[in-house]
Amino acid sequence: MLGRFHKDESGAVMVEVSISIVLLLVLTLGFVDFGHAFYQWNAASKAVQMGARLASISDPIATALPTAGPVNTPGAPMQAGAFGPFECTVSGCTNGGGFSANAFSRVFRGDTAVTNDDACPPRNAGQRPGMCHFFPNLRREELVVTYSASGLGYQTRQGGPVPTISVRLDDVPFRFFFLSGLLGFDDITMPSMISTITGEDLSSSGPT
Image (tube, rainbow, N blue to C red; front, side):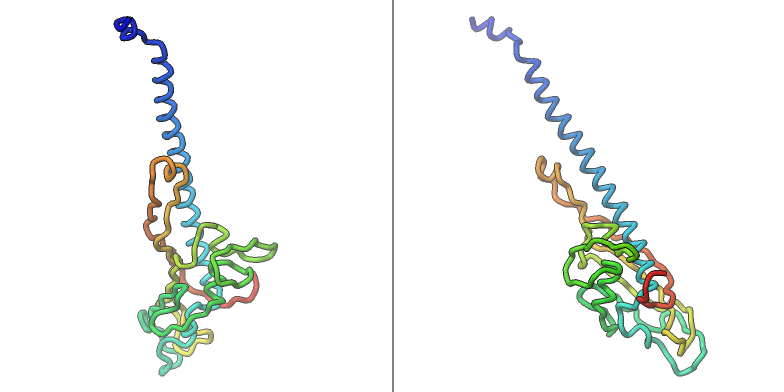
């Protein structure tokens, strides 16, 4: 009896299939999760590019920018490094740059209503989208906008100096769904991503 039980292989296939299905399921869900992570990376990169473009044609977040730099020699070239840089987050701007919550919200949300949370409102026809429309998982505390002296423009220029504008995302996590529940994966922080553009005539007046 014991010998016959020892040689009995019935049910072995079921055990092997059960193990294989578990491994296959984990592998499949892993592909889905990492594919979603790749989508998040692309969406965040696009949001940074569009944020820089929107910041370049919008009122500056650093309210001191229009009057930054020397004015003692009207018409003289504005030197690189003549002011700032003003680094602006949701908490404010460095170097005494002042802070416009409306301008910050506009980069984050586009031409939609100004609010003080991470909610991304629907975009209406004729409105420019904000960064959150390209990357819905974006949070305001992850956004950094920097204005620095580009060396373009001249002293006493109407509208102020021409800045170099950098839009950066910091501490943005890859968010896992299946692997987080199955294997206890923690969110992985994306490397910082940045887009830099030269400012134009900064203004929030309607779509161009």
